[in-house]
Image 1 (spheres, one colour):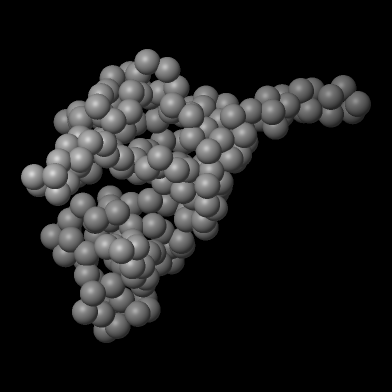
Image 2 (image 1 turned 30 degrees about the vertical axis):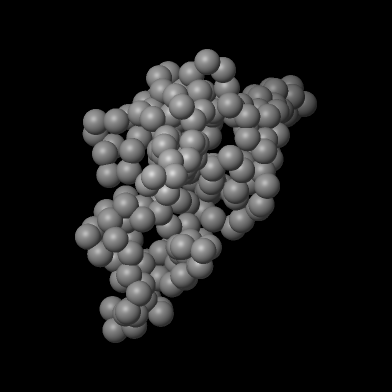
Amino acid sequence: MKNHFLYLFICLLPNILFCQEIISGNYGEGLHIAYNNETHQITGFYENYTGWDESTNSAQFSCVFYIEGFITDKESKIMTYYLNDRTNSVIEGTLAIKTNQSISIVLKSEPKGCWNVEHFTEEPVPFELEKKSNWTALKYITTLKSYFHKDKSKESQLKSYLIKGAIIYVEKTEENWAFCSYIGKNNKITTGWLKITDLN
């Protein structure tokens, strides 16, 4: 019996040492991460810009991509792609856990536009947690319009809606609904229930 428990401890030891859980939240430098500790799925969104064009009053260069994967070890495989283009723009990479509040990301090739913003191929890019959140997933709208609902019913539809490609932050899912928030202009936050069928 003693040897049996020793064997079990040795088998579980790698998971204890390496499979740390990531904290959901804002990791700064344009990275938002959500981790579901029940499914071990990680989803995220990176959005950063550089250079300012006064003639257009906008940034000259952009680096934007969606992240998804499963945390299986200290270093886990992820895939990144442009919103609504999972078929043609997938780039594989690795997400490494330093601590539960510190991670790094390295990709096999540079996403379009990222070379002028952040290099993800030369060496792992470090990120530190700046603000903790209770997100279980980051999703995006896949339908032309997705209306917010006051509760989990079609009859409670509100006037506010999101369009295809909008990023939302899921806090919980129940039945066929997701309770989530959307961060709009001037950091205005809209919350409510969305149909899961409207999300990726």
